[in-house]
Structure formats: structure tokens, C-alpha cells
Length: 329
Length: 183
Image 1: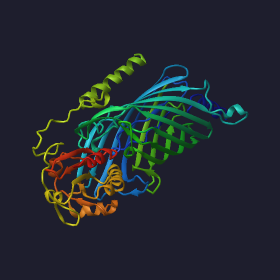
Image 2 (image 1 turned 45 degrees about the horizontal axis):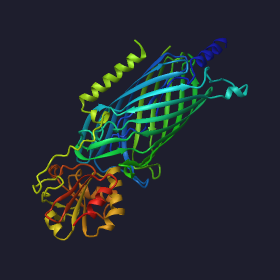
Image 3 (image 1 turned 180 degrees about the horizontal axis):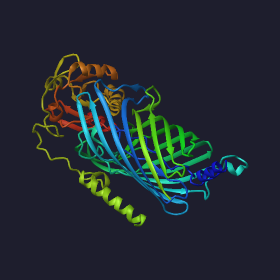
Image 4 (image 1 turned 45 degrees about the vertical axis):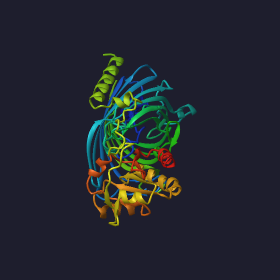
């Protein structure tokens, strides 16, 4: 019993945001037609020095929602897939500050009726800065006073750098691209509360794309214009349950719902509705972590429902992700 | 090694890799007009050139010849579709907001990916575009002829078959302005 109590204290001490997460900040991957490999935001636990993360994604396409929100299957003989390898590194910059960088590498493997595309390259890189509004870990085993209900609140900013190959580079079609071609700044808010064995997380993100010059589109030089994509909003709500193994390793099961949308883009200041989009996603995650939380292994299945009004002007995809995180104390 | 130094190394590596793959266009975009100069009146797909004539079957096996179509229309618009979300947004916008205002212009969707009439017809029906005439090139030589790709809109006027526009549909404003400026 004493050992169990000691282990629980260890878990809580090393917890914080209790195992470090690779947030699905950008489930807007989409090689086919609408974007490319993007990455996520990496957050490490309190009192850790650094964290390294490696994840592999397989995203397969299953039709799309049209501009009215109606689901449409892909044409016959289509098999669209994107594979991504994401390398992340987070580093503690101060007692309450941490920064991270995530580099994705993308493989496109698409058969689309008569068209075949097999391309690869860097995706868009993400740089993140997070501020923790708390000094002590906030996960608790029992609520004994109001203060025990205090959540862990993180405030963050992200910069997406267009290191991928976009439609504005020398590409033949949308299947060749691995990035969106725009710089983007995001303001992020993450609220996390753990009352063992339960936990809940809310992530809110607002992103603004920076306007850029365009003189080439899908490989052909065009009349120069100034363009930008529409403002971006993401909300993710998740709830999890942690099961403690005899060894005090843990298995955590998490369910999440995400809503992502982008407004009309702009072309020389005029609205461009063709880039407007919306996507709702359900995700389930199983994470196994060692007692000291130094190693975390995760598997996530993210599912977009192929039904009317679950999205707009965007591909319907399923994403399988396998992830390994290593925390350096 | 300090964090700042590591970050710089990562950034440098990123930029080197990006440069290798000709991705600097996104990191440092250019607004310079690099469209190729054309000889007015020559045959080709660029604005100011004479459109290459062609004959293509539609999805009901009816042949359409550009020069013949132009004898009874103020212009021909070719929209290159691959039945994707963006193509659908463009084509739907064209159907609702542009086609009704230009009854004397012939609008064609060009299905440049299906490769066969039966498959193209199937995609046309599944995508809800039976009200459009869909042309079906059976090889990619036609797409190369017009230097077109997904979302490209080409406007060919009746006055000597001059190409008035050949670029992405985007928000449709340029297509509308081009059609309004027709003689």
C-alpha cells in the first residue's frame, strides 16, 4: 500500500500535463487537393528538461464534402494516401516556458482515376512557444478543496513555416504538394485537468495566415496577385481514463472531438470562397507510458465521418498515427 | 550545445533542404511577372495566341470541334476538372453565378483524369454535373496542348480564336471580367 502511494506521488510529480502530448493542432493534413503535410504542437510535462518525439502517420482519403457540406465519394479507381514522419523536439526555456520544433516529412501515394502521383518532401515546419500559468502540477487523486480543481492552463503561440512543396511551386497538380505555401501565426490556449484516473483537455486555437505574393500556380506562371488563406479556428475537446498496471506503468484511453474551420481566403483583397473549409473529426488514442513517464507510446485513430454536414469543401480522411515520446529530465 | 544553437541548426537544415527542392518560392515569395512573352497571333495556349483547334468526344460520345463551336458562340470556356473538392467548388460557382449571365458562351468541363468516356460519364453523374457538357480527352496530350491542370479555366473568343485567359479559376472574378470584356 505504501509502495502504491509512493508510486502515485511519483506519477503526479512527473505528470503535469501528465505524459507530454503531440497535440493534433493541425489535423488539416490533406495531400489530396487541399493542402499538405502539416505538423502538430508538442508539449512536454512540467519539470522536464526536454522531449523528443517521433510519430508516423498514415492518412487515407475517403471522398470529400462539397461546398454545401454534402458528402461525395471519390471517383472510381481512386486510392489516395499520404504518409508522414514527424520529428519533434521540445526544450525547456525557463521554469514556465518551453519551445518546440516539429519537422514533418511527407510521402504522397495517389492513384486517382487516370492519374498517378508519387512524390515526397518536407512538409510545413511548426515552431511553438508555450507559457505555463502554474508552478506546481495540478493533477490530483482526490478533490479535497476548491484549489484541487484548478486546471493546468497553457498559453502558446505557433509559427508555421512553409517548408513544404505547395501549389505555388513547380508541381503538376494538387497530389504533388506537401505544404500549403503560407506562413501562419496561431494563438493557442490549452486547459487540462486530471483527477485520476480521469482527465479532460480543451484546446482552442486561432490562426492567421500571412499574405504573400503569388506568380505561379500549379507549375504555370500567372498574373501576379497577393493572396492569403482565411482565418483558422480549431477547437478540440478530449476526455481520458488512465488505467494503472501492476508495474505502475499506465494505459490511458482518450476520446477526442475536433472542429476545424477556415474562412474565405483573399485574392488582392477580394474574398476567395474556394479555400473556405470545415472539418469535424473524432479520434481515439491509446497511450502506454512507463511509471516515471520518461517513455510514452501512443496509437491514435482519427476518423472523419463520411456523412453530410460533418465538413465542407474538404477531403474526408482517416488518420492512423503511431508515436513515441521520450522525456529528458 | 545550447538550445538556440540547436534551433539554428534545425532552421539551417530546413532551409537547405527546402532550397534543394526548389521550395524557396514559398519561403521568400516573388511577385515578379514571369509569364513567357508570346508572339501575338501565333498558335498556342498563352493569352494573345490563337487557340489550338481540337475535336473531343463528350460523355455521350458526341464530338465537339472548337472551331465549329465558335461559329455559334461568342466564346468557349474550358474548365479542367478532376472531380475534386476544389474543382467542385469552382464548377458549382461557375454553374450558379457565371453561366446564367452569359447564355451566348459555350461552357465545357474537361475531364482530364478519367481517360475514357464510360468512366468520365460515371464520374460526371456521381458528381452531379449532368447539366454540363463534359469533354473527355483520352490522353494527356490535350492537357499539355493547353498547359492546363486542375482548376484551369481557358477562355477562347470567337474573334480569331484568341485565348483571352488561361489560369486557375480562383474566385471566378477574372473569368467574369474576361467574359464581360469580350467583343
